[in-house]
Length: 70
Image: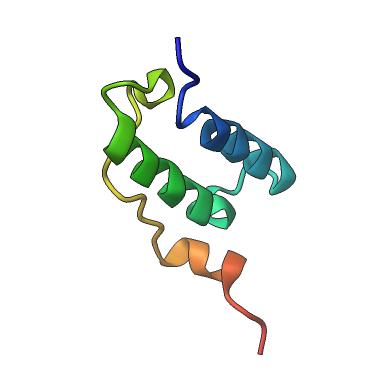
């Protein structure tokens, strides 16, 4: 059986969440990469089973976590 094409990204999400104290907004680029991978490989990727293909949206409450300090 071939390797799951999105498994590496699933692991990157877990690593990013741990490194960022589970603040999902800080991992948004990895979530988007996973979404793109699942859009392409969902029929053959087990890690995409149950993964939403809708973009993750973070509201204004999250902006202070990633906004640059001026």
